[in-house]
Image (cartoon, rainbow, N blue to C red):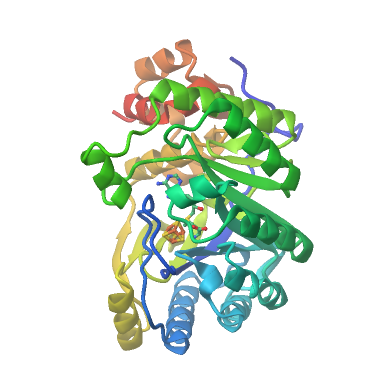
Length: 396
Ligand SMILES: C[S@@+](CC[C@H](N)C(=O)[O-])C[C@H]1O[C@@H](n2cnc3c(N)ncnc32)[C@H](O)[C@@H]1O
Ligand code: SF4
């Protein structure tokens, strides 16, 4: 199978960019499917948190030296619980310490509750240009099942407000819910497409072990959708999104041309990014070595350490070339565009064939799971649906 054409005639690898990720680890309640680093706290001293985030930002800006940010992403948790003043302070400090490229993307993840929506205009004024809403479902009974605090009507209102206030917006839906029917998902996705901006994230429900859904599954009280049924919904989703002009550029992410999340593309293209806040990860090239950073995960431990030392880095380690290749493959094969050979050489110092078993590569190509050409290696749609197995075969 041929590789999908890129948009330029000259097949040069796109620049991966340089991003900043900011983690806000608090939520109003914990959704039963979610195993993100998010916590419910009755009181948050936001002034202390603001100082902590700014201190860690200063620390990483000192480590990287002068570079320009192509993106900044506020993720969580629920960053739409942040005071717009805190969001603005982080944006301003990032502008001061690193600076932004002219087309830099600044995204904030938001929940659609009315209190959160009341802060949207403040985020826009603070410099956020892209809002990413966690909608999850567009009917009240599934929202209840997913433990969401908002109604479908609030979700629709929040999307309309985001469309009015922000140059770009996206929203997330979770599908392949237990018992979900093909026809009802089709109708829900049609409704979503009617409200879509330049981007939609469509995730299949994953039952994570360490969550209430995981426990319900072990007790036999929650039956996940059968694999073949979920695969049918996945294929329907791909077809509908393609027809609507928002094809998948990553397994679960769909965009109009140019509407891709530049921040997430930096991860998937294995670019550099700094991560601040509890549990944030970073990948930074410093002095010729690529370093992996992970910050303390527990909010209180993070804050205490930042206040003592100006940063709360739990681990920092150089990434060996072989591991760099493995990370690049895990990230890049999620993308429709795949992995660029020139980037593999740039990051690891050796070509693709040096890192993979030739026989395994040939088998995956012959089986229709990978496609290769002079510039790139990419997973086919069938390969992307079984990416874990493809990676296991490739990276042994
Ligand atoms: C960091 S989370 C949430 C953003 C925001 N707090 C919210 O919930 O609206 C990012 C997205 O991951 C998705 N997600 C989280 N857990 C999931 C799971 N177990 N299965 C599928 N999707 C999941 C949801 O769509 C969610 O919006
Ligand atoms: S899905 Fe979002 S709101 Fe729900 S617990 Fe996870 S991060 Fe918090």
